[in-house]
Length: 269
Ligand SMILES: Cc1ncc(C[n+]2csc(CCOP(=O)(O)OP(=O)(O)O)c2C)c(N)n1
Image 1 (cartoon, helix red, strand yellow):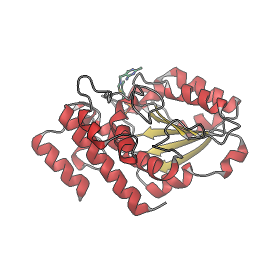
Image 2: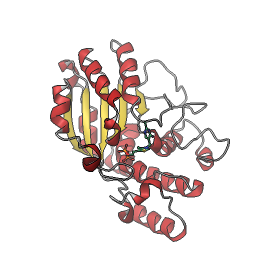
Image 3: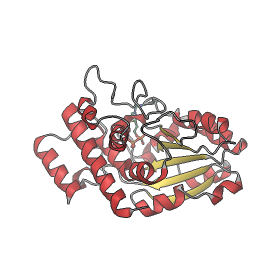
C-alpha cells in the first residue's frame, strides 16, 4: 500500500462527489464523505478488478448496499478507468445511467443496483456462497441505519452457517441516519458482541485511517477460521469538510456557490 497515493485518491473522490452533487443539486454528500476513505482503500489497494475486462470471473466483487452514496463509487470507477471521467458530469441528469442511487444498468464496474436499504448483504451472501471454493472475495459496504432492516440479520445468520470466509462486510458506523442519530432511532449497541454471537469475526477500525482499514481488510489468515468477517468502521458523516461533519443537514443538502468554494478549500488543504 502507498499511503500517499491512497490519501490523494480519497481527496480526488471527495472532490468528484462534491462537484457531482453540487452540479446536480442532489443529496447525500455527507453519506459519501463518510465512506470516502474506505472506498479509496478498497479501490486503490484491495480490490482485484480489471477495468478493461470488468466481468472477468475471478474478480473480487464489491457491492454498495447503502446505495444513496453511489456517486462516490461512480467517481472511483471512472478514476480507475471503467468509464470516462467526463461521464461523471451527467450524474443525476435526466436520461443519465449514473443515477443518484447506484445502478448497474449500463454502468461498467457496478455489480448490483441498490437504494432500497437492506439488500446488499443478502446478495453478497449468495455471491460468496457460489464462489466459496474459488478465490473470489465479496465486499459489502453498508450503513449503520441500514441495520434496522431485518433482512440483514437473516443474512448474518446465513453467512456464518455457510462459513462464508470469503465475505467481508463493512459497516459505515457514522452514528447518524437521515434525520436522527442511530442511538435515538434504534440503538444498535452492543453491536460488536451481537455480530460475534451471530458467528462473525469482527474488527473495529477508524474508518478514516487508511492504514488501519487496509490492515484489517486484506488479512488472509482469518480465512482459515472459516468465518465471515465484519469490519465496524467508525466514521464521521461529512468527513473532510468541517462544516459538514456530524451535521445531518448535509444528508440532503447540496453545496452551492460560497459553500461549494469553502468545501473545496477544506478538502484541498
Ligand atoms: C428500505 C428503505 N427505507 C428508507 C429509505 C430512505 N433512506 C435513505 S437514506 C436513509 C437513512 C440514512 O442513514 P444511514 O442508513 O445510516 O446512512 P448514512 O447516510 O448515514 O450513511 C433512509 C431511511 C431507503 N433508501 N430504503
